[in-house]
Length: 247
Length: 208
Image (cartoon, rainbow over the protein chains, first blue to last red):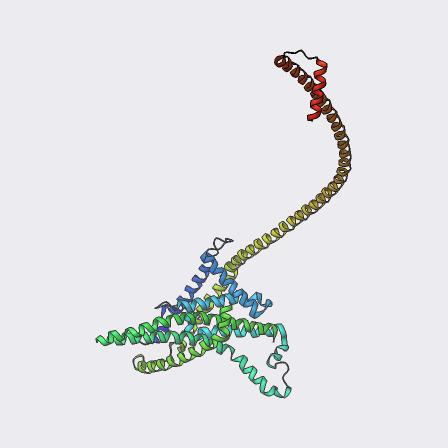
């Protein structure tokens, strides 16, 4: 009945490396499942390598071209080497979100530590890339062109705070969306159980209402799952563009 | 892409607001439930904030993400790229080939046009030349025809004249014989041929 119970990490078998507990849990299982699913889709789909694609191959190609276009349009032509990473990131989040829509399945993107780790990696990688590419000129990133110098004391701290908050907003956006959606579904499902559990005829009739609402919400949540994977990925592309071009 | 871009511009903001509103609603529900269930579970709070689970999640995240990255980077994406490249190559090859064929057919068409032009000019020339010749020979023919015609006309006229004279002579003779016969049968007299001929001649002259 606890709507947060679905987020609990349950170890499946214990793994301890260097004295740290890294047990294989329901979260790890979902991640490995996503790896298997994504890899299967991309290889089984392309198995025939036909010039005229079938359904699965079309899907694999559409995903490839979708992300390739996103990287090209939002991160620029110099960002081509980052395409495999961006593609992996998109597929990992997308399938993580969608896998979570299966009742009973664990949604690892609803864990802030997971989304924050990904966002932090993107943030650190992009910052490192900018410093390696532009050296000390990277500092000019925090002072936009054409702004009077006397505004610098106000503007530069704002820009720095805004830059530093990127990984937080990036990770919290995904985490909060997924967690909120899944909690909401569980809360409404809980209402039905409470109402029907009352044993009265009225309870049984009224218990149908949350089911109807949940049906609509599941559609909405699938939309959120797609959209949040897209948002995370496109923001990563924009950060890469900033690092490459220092606007 | 376009749809999603559109979503990223206008619809996205609205959806974000809706999501945030729902999140606030759910947060109230969550906090309420968490407070209510706090007694049972003891620990309460979000499972996401339990530090004991951080290491395992990071570890498996790194393992699975790196695995997926190298699987896609090394195996899957080159395959997709190869197929897309092959298709693009095939399409551009087809387009080049089609261009070649079109150029070729244009050249053939131009050659045909030139040939047609030349042939037409030749035909024109021949027509104008032959029509000049035709005119000249026609004139000659006409003259020859005229001469021939007049000659034949004259011949025919003389032949007609002879025939008419012969016919008239015959008629005279027949008339004389007839008159002689009539005179012998009716009057019972023998009339001298010369006199009858004279009389017949006088009658014919009177009649004609």
